Length: 114
Image 1 (cartoon, rainbow, N blue to C red):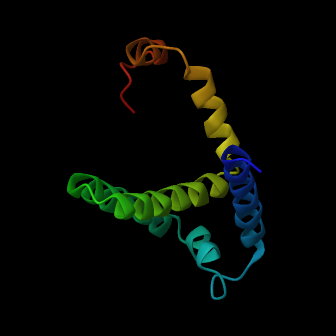
Image 2 (cartoon, one colour):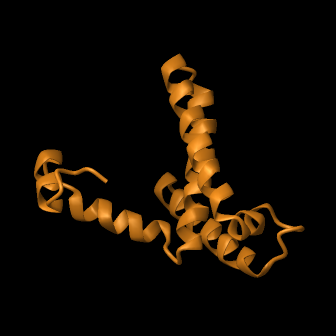
């Protein structure tokens, strides 16, 4: 099994687990507790983004990987909360592939500001 297959498999497995956690008790599942408190879920994304930035600024390779994993995880929880998946994001990235960043922003019609 190559790295790409492993990575896709992990995303698929994680997506399935996150979906299953929607039916769990917030007392028994960290993910379910985030679903029950969307503000906390979004706060965690912000916290992990800041920690990722600090790790990158410090150039600590292992810490960058660790913090990025936390950021991606919490982002995937948010996507699942909104009935979206990593595939939806990957599809959007695929749509943008080969476009200049400037051109992609112009196509959005708002100067790229979200």
